[in-house]
Image: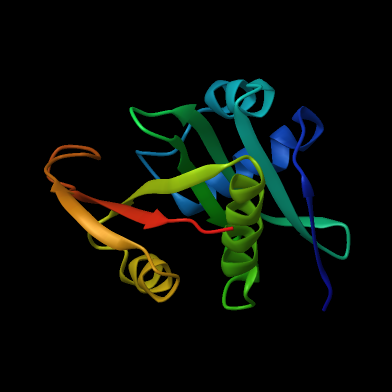
Length: 152
């Protein structure tokens, strides 16, 4: 198994949307939202492939905060049949490296409070919980905001 990571484009939209719908239910991004993010010049969109098949993707945006440039991971998705192969970690690491090259000092993301596997992955990678987000997802589904200081 060989994983390749490259920039995602609108040509990947259909499979990225399928993966998004497989990973998330009511809180999934719409196809239009994914297309907007793929076209956004402030976005970094990466797709992981196994044998020329899209296996997962990550999208983050960059913006200027009060004191530094900030990266915000909007979504990281891995198709069910490709989980537990290191794809999520690879995508996260690649995105963080790109953020560092863009002089991003801090990376934020949000995750469902009940997504234990994702929270463990983020903690192992140095993300710390900043605050709980009541009803961040559909009513009754809470989130957690995480933050990591990136270093060159």
